[in-house]
Image (tube, rainbow over all chains, first blue to last red; front, top):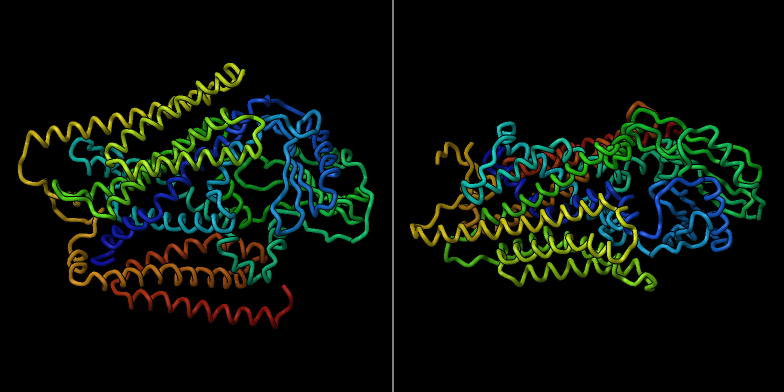
Length: 512
Length: 120
């Protein structure tokens, strides 16, 4: 805050990084997992088999279900099955305030699916931007934390003048603090473009919610109108207030599909049963960065086209490309893996930064650590190892909870948070070095147990080889990491005992 | 170990430590004031700028809103960096207050124009 630009930015980097670190670590980890959302969902519903299916008959089955179960809804949404999500997902909106109703239907029969009740990969996806809280609260917390992270990134770059040299610098053995500092720099700098991109595009993805004042000023707050003019959605046609008969759905969808080469993704019916009902056919994003779905709206009673979403204008294209970059729907296998690795590097940057904060403030031999240091140490372990423990427990819960348990999906979430909370409590109760080793080992064992339990409780053979390999890899990495920490500590203590010299010089310094 | 120049990368050392021991309470309230100024002042500037640019950028209004919203977070980040980089709290407040006043005035004029001009 004082003493020149670089010093004030160093201060800002330290404290902005600390206050936002725990939330953003969880956001990075769950967001990184979300790159494989479809694969996680497939693993978590072992009753379903991936494979192609016919979108239009599936959409008809979804609409038939909604006609029977939600006849009074304002809007119906039917998500067509995809090769990697072999289920019809239906949602309905009873009012603007009420949460969406939802059901998962079997692709062939259109009846509620026999697959186990689970949120699947959507659990981490929603956690990533809502923390599984009330949407408004969770999104604002994540947004504020992301904004602070952006500040920490900028001030970190200013602080760091040897950015290129530090690509190649890793002085693990010089001292604990050097090692952590270099690890923080390497993981941070190596994927710096990704970190900046993913943070800014993440904020922009919910940008109209965080910064609604442009819409307020130019549209008098009518954000639906803005989205229509920005070519993101079709116009909402108000209900006529009298019942109407809809033309058959399949020919409409076939006509829409005739115009657009992308696969059908969703069918929306606004004001179903009304004389003014609208059917909107929504297609998958065309190849490219921009997050825009081609859409065609029909008058449900006459079957005539009432609206087509227009091509994107330049600024809207940039805006939606930011969203597209964040979600990486465009990425094929290799690029997706690269994004995944960059996400892991981001999580590692945050984790090493948090640890570095405590290492730089380690008390001299004989001094007791203060309250702040003990709190940060506990929260560090509770987050950095507690979250993976929660995730592994979540996967195990998916296999071990009885399939017909009532509110099963909620229980899975309970297992996730319960295991995480337990780990956090343990990390506060145990001496902190012990806690690193023990919880690291626990996380490793839990991840290692996932493929074993999966093989014992399902008969899918080798269908999930990649998932199992990822679990084993994570488990191994966590267990080895824990072992490394314990060895390193043992060596240090031995060295200290052998060389009882004057107290070490505190190392808050960096050569520049 | 060669220490040519000391940089407090991970610690508030040097003058800040002295300031802290001299008056812990004063230091903390100074930090709190900057945090408050950065959060509320920064958001006020970014929000006003978003509204102002949405009305005045020479493009279709949906494009103006998209552009303004896109850059608003860069404005917010810049404002926060400024608040923490300024030498004194007063400079920080003035440096933020002046653009807020200017953009606010501009927005007021632009809103007037919207009210009197043809509907957009």
